[in-house]
Length: 486
Ligand code: AMP
Ligand code: MG
Image (cartoon, rainbow, N blue to C red; front, side):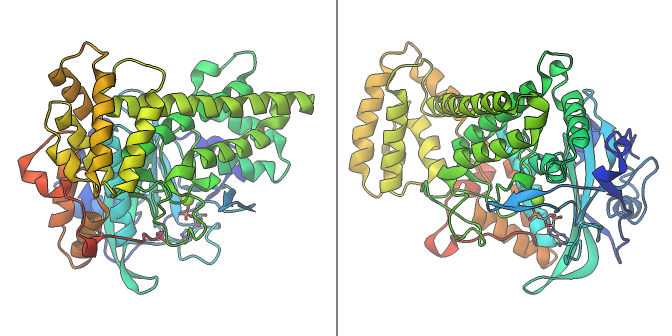
């Protein structure tokens, strides 16, 4: 079914543990992403869903697979854990997709591995569907993320706070190499492995750096810029990752490990959803600073490769960290400039954006709706936009300042509004609708999940059939906390 071409499994033994998925009782295919399968050149026999389910649940290991659990370490909420690793995930193998890109096929929730510690190696249906929805929603929103190939029910219970149906998530990633993968070897003083891993990720993700004068410094810089870009885009849609530990940050620049992530409803820069983030470490506004902190941890791992003179290496790494900050600022401004419909750059644009965000915070405006309705305001209808603020006066004043700024640009209202609608989504995976889909699926009804997924495929369009997904939660529907899969 898969045309595997595995490369990570050819790295030395200490990079992973070879381990087979543990078969499950009654695999049932809940969802299969046919479009992604085609992109990955997977030949899936949809007329035999039983066999497909058995394969995607790990009961039948497909030909050519070299199943491994990857070794990694990581800083979890700031504390270093020298060994984490794939405790409930198994990399089946890699395929080369239709456009020549190498992609990992991973089963998540496929049973214990040598890295499971006290965990059961399993996943519950709720978190699996959450990750499915978010992966595909992010992709449709134009934000780099790991993808969802399938969700399979296992027919077995998993024991969390209560008994829940078990499921397996089939994840597709540019690779699963994380900052924590480098940390695993750095913690062991294994410089040879760090160099092998660095060469591997350069070859796989940043081939243009091969053979350049300082490839490892260039690698650090490339990862830093990719992450700065990613986090700027996250902020642009109100995304709160929730667990930005160094093991949940990729080298490729894809969003990964959607555990307790969520999108803002009303705008609050200090918003935290995750039930385990007591200190607000990973709050919406803290994400760029945390990403930079994580890149600093990557830099530490790479120091031995940067220069024999370690003082010089530290200086070079620090310069990259500084560049991260500048790049993030520039990308953030670019993202938000587009959101408020500016085509040109001018001094003071950042203040204009901040003033809007300030009014949104004060007026408890829904993040997504405010920007989407601003597209209508660009064409002269302010009512809907203003009605989203508890105190519309500030917002009205802001509109006036905004219009003075717009007057300096030649574009017509129609052109501006159309451009704004391509960056300000109408439909996002709102927490209460995800919850609704999960509750229904747990009771055996996949219809709400299917409908939500369909709506999320074209987030920048106004589709009458899906208008209900644009509505923020009523006070009693609001999801205050989200939970990890563990
Ligand atoms: P995560 O919270 O998904 O980023 O995972 C952090 C670490 O805990 C990783 O090493 C996971 O493999 C491990 N882990 C999470 N859930 C389980 C589980 N149910 N069984 C075994 N290991 C787990
Ligand atoms: Mg993780």
